[in-house]
Structure formats: structure tokens, C-alpha cells
Length: 317
Image (cartoon, rainbow, N blue to C red; front, side, top):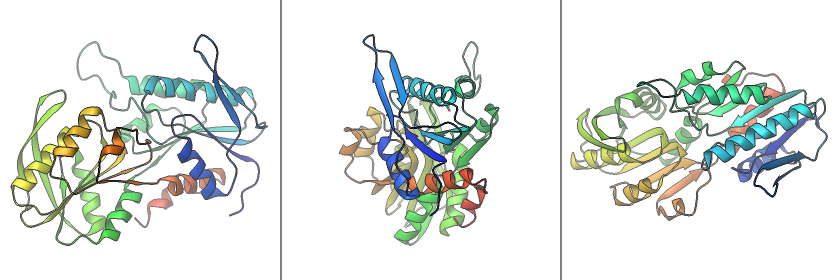
């Protein structure tokens, strides 16, 4: 793969392994940068490669600790802008604050728009992200956004499993379009779970529209945070006679309560990608499988660098 030295990829501290794998895919070295702190705790970044006139990409998920990784990304962008990079792309495999995308009650912020403004002001010329929580978040940015779909990676994995008698179940109404796409990709039937939210972190699955008895079930979502919705849905389909239950998600946030719920739920396999690195607690999930998005990101970066179509990546899901 021919790429000239005009392309530079740098890694923030949130997911350096993913950035390194992207560089391996492209056959280029990872850009040199030193991330340090002043004695008072302030973060300082020094880019050690010459980036003047070059096409630069910064790989940084804004995962936990969210605020620290976000500020680090902003500093990195400002650093590259002041070093005279010709174009700067913020590669954000997991975009934090995406769920705060509207005012659903009085006196609350729209933090997704605030973060989008900050990234643009810091110096990003474009953004490359995977599975934003809502597609309309692309419109929150006043710069181009290339939006990749984790289903490109997840669909291939589940297709290779060759699951018989497959029914793709949407764990809630909001996930219906995603479930429909997976059903189309994998050739399975479709069902939907109706749920009732009991509190901010507790939901109850109540009814199923569609047939699950005697079927193998796949439930896919963009994110597993507390796992309340998906575990409740898994318990319900098992109660209604489902055989095996598989869970897929692009972003494995895996909050502490999620680990406990996943351990107790009647689930035969959990699949997530490496947009967020597994922490030590998450590694205790015995049946978890992590898929890499490095090749997808690397191919998108190559196409952006060459001014080629990124959307063509998804023609053959």
C-alpha cells in the first residue's frame, strides 16, 4: 500500500493500541508525541515529528475518564494547528457526551453540541467517528464528518458464525432500524421487545412482537453502558423459549453495574469492538469477544487522505 510521508497519525492516551494497529494496517509508523503533565497536574503535549504542511490524524476516544481524554484531544488539535499542519482530522472511535443531544427537560445543556464546537474551535478540519449515538450529531459539527458503522465489523463476525434459525431482536423501539439492517445483512427474522423504563438505570422488558421460541437470538446496539435494556430483553426472550442469545455492540462502555448484569443474564456470547479498551473489570466477563476496528479505520483514513469515497466502504456489508 503506497502512502507518502505527508500522512501522519498520532495517538492520544485513551486507546494507543488501536492507533498502533491502524498504523500497522497502513504500513506507516505512529507519529511521535510526548504527553506529560506539569507539576500542578495540567497536561502538556509536544509533537516530536515535523507536521508542517502534512495531513494529520489524531486517534482519541473520549471514553472514561471522559473529561480528561476530551481535554487531551483538544490540546492535541491545538498543538497540531499551531505546528502548521495542513489538515487535521479528529479520529474519535467513541464520541462521549453523544447522548446529551437535546433538551428533554428544562435547564439542561446540549453537551453534544458544546463538545462539537470545542473540537472545531481547537483546530479540527474534519471528524472521523464510529457509531455516533444518533446520526443527527453529524449536523452538530460545522466541519465535515465521516461516520463509520460498527455493523461492518459485527455483521461479518456473526455471518461467519453461521447461526441457524436466527432472529434478530431489537431490545427497544429506538433500535428498530439497526435491528432491521442486521436482519437484512444476516438473513434472519426480525422481532422487537417493548420495554418500560422504571428509573434512570432500570428498565423492564414486557412484551415481544415476533417469534422467538426455538430460535437463536441476536441483539445488537451501538453501546452497552449499564446493560439494563439488553439483559432484561435477553431474560424475556429466554423465558419465551429462545435457544441461544448473542449480544453485539460497537462500544463496550461496561459500567460497573453492567458487568454484574451480564454475568447473571442468560447470554451465550457478548461481542464488542475495541473503540474503547477493556478495563480490568470488563475482562472478567468470561464470554466476551473483542473485534478490532483498526482495518476499517485505517481504510477510511487512507481514503480521506487520498480524497476518495468513504461511503463505498459499506457497499458490501
